[in-house]
Image (cartoon, rainbow, N blue to C red; front, side, top):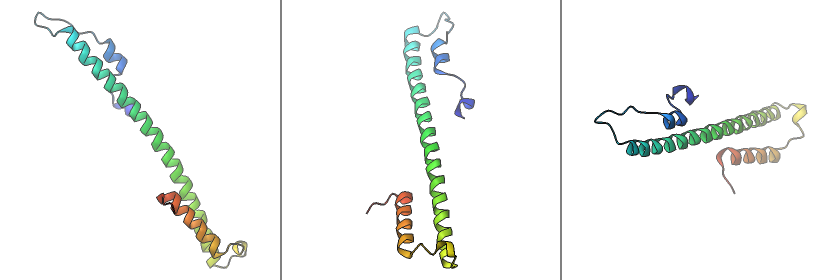
Length: 110
C-alpha cells in the first residue's frame, strides 16, 4: 500500500554514491546523515507494518462484534414477534448477552 508511494528503500539509500566536485561535501558527514535517514526509514517501515497489522486485527474484531450484534438483534426481534424458535430465551439471558456485547465493544468492566 504505502510502498507504491515511496521513491527509495533503505538499501538504495545505503548504496547511493555521490560524485565529488572540487567544492564537494565531506563524505563522512554525508555518510553519517544518510545513516540517520536509513535508521529513520527502517523505523517508519516497521511502525507502518505494525499499524497495518493492528488495523487488520481490529477490523476482524469489529466484524465479529457486528455479526454478534446482528444475531442478538434478530433474537430480540424474534422474541418480540413471538417466534416459537426463540421462546427458550428469556429477558435475563438477553440482557446478559447485550451487557457482554457492550463490554466487548466499549471495553467497560464492572
